Image (cartoon, rainbow, N blue to C red):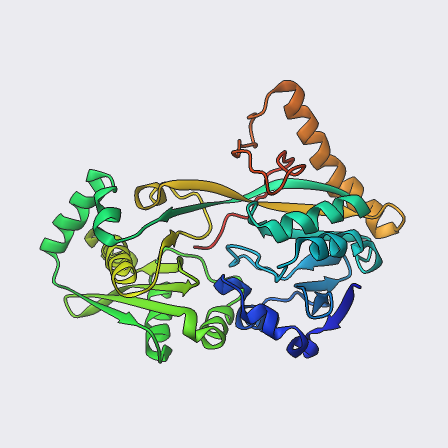
Length: 357
């Protein structure tokens, strides 16, 4: 049932991925990751079950991992049938190379929940808490903006009145906007990108789902943002502003204009602030959750034994410690219970990868 397809055979499952309701489940997203983010010695592949399911993965010396990167806000394979997803998870030992890792898992995804239950039945598995995600359902801009804290509304009103700002919303022909983004990135507080070619490849491959925003103040473009808009969800994916313009709050002004435009002109019902628990995000979004990661190992192989000792056992030990001595000790966090990932609610070690948002 479980097939391991080389990436060159993507066309066999492309119709499945094309139907994804998440931008990060579309073929172009995974193509960009394959082109620009694989480690030396890794290759991209697809775990498939005929034309019924597809999990993009990367395969290397350490085993199999989900095809993700520090940019991924939600791992979104095509698993529409939960029974097939479970069987794929259960059969992973045959292709795992001893160890399996997945991250950026949405705990409310029923397909991934079924896959992970199967994975747990075939291998020794442990789950951990990953990065935080902020989001908010929003039917219209007026209602959304009325729910924001008064300090945020006041900042936007005061800074808008003080600045001669011009806003540009870009839906296509992104080359010029990307050039502005790169220039601002170099003049910002942010560290260089871990995969410098990814953003341009992603925008090119995923263009119908990409939106960009630029903010010009006093004749100079001082802030830029990249959003993903698909399936009724608008994800604030990347944002930068010039450090020497920080006093003008250009990032705040641009985020306000982008949200207003998306809620007014696009078929958007959910706003999403991507990766990370930055304190400012709680002013913009009202729902906080965490993505999950899972590491699993096959004790029958050398690589699996090493992974058990280094990752799985410490994770399970951390979970047991918190059960006996407190659920929210240092380095842990409480996530609301959810029925989709029963058996994976308790985490061990907390993932260190907070994002580059």
